[in-house]
Image (cartoon, rainbow, N blue to C red; front, side, top):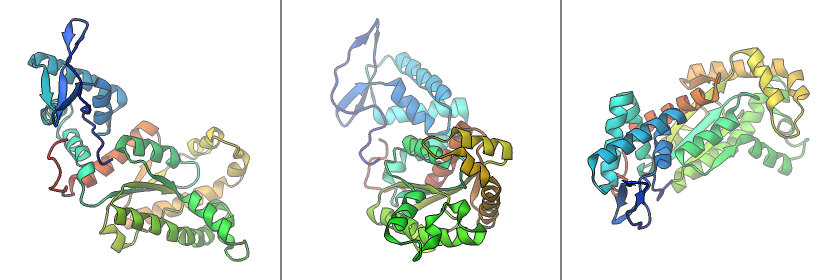
Length: 309
C-alpha cells in the first residue's frame, strides 16, 4: 500500500488527443498521466460500491473533467472532484468512505483485518477479494498455521491439530485446536503491528474477540465473522469447492460444521463482533469494506504525509 499512487498519476506523460477530445492529465509532484476511468473505478469500488456503479461514476467524473476545459488537474483537485460526485450521487456515507480509503496509506497504526467463519462459508475468497480492493498484499490463512504445527508436532504430542476443525472432537476439541493455532495468529498480528504493514488473516481458527488487548492498541483492528444462515445454501457451497477436497467428507460432517458456526456466532454476539451472512459475495464484500473504512475514518492519519494523494 505505501507508495501506491491510486490517483492514476505516476511517470511523466505528454498531453495527447484521443479521437477529437483532449485527455485530462492528472498531475502529482510535477509528473502526470492521462485520467484513467479504470483506475478511478477501482478507487471508487473501495467504498463498497459495485464495479458497475463505480465505472458509471468514473465516467461521470471524466465528463466533469471535460467540462472544465483544462488540460491538467492536480491529484488533490481530482480527489476533491471525486468526493463531490460521490456526495451528490451517493451521499455522505460513501463520500466519507472514499476519504477513509485515501487515509489507508497514512495510518499511524497498520490495518489488521481478521475474518472468521466455519468451513464452506466463503471466507477465503472474500479475504482475497477484500485484500485486492484495499491494496493489501498479505493474506494469511489459519489452516497454513495448523499445517505448520502438524509438521513440527506428532499426533501424540499435539493430536488436535491433526484434524480439521469440525473433526477435532466437537466444540471442546475445536477450542483446543483454536488455542494452539491462535498462538500463531497472535504472532502474525503482533509482527504486522511491529512492522507497520497491513495484513488480512482468515480462517476457522479466528475466534471472535480473540486478539489480545495489547496487540489491539498497536493496530487498526477490524473483526468480522462470515456465516451462511441458510443450511441448504451452506451445503451447496461444498459442491463448488476447488481442488481435490471431496465434497462428501464435508457433507458427512455438515451437522458438526453447523454446530461450530452456531458456537462462533454466539461468541461474536458476546464480543460485539460483526456477523455477516454471506448471501451474495458482492454484498458481503461491500459490508466488509464498510467495516474497514468506518474503522479507518475514526483513526488519525500520520501528519508527515501529503494531505491528498
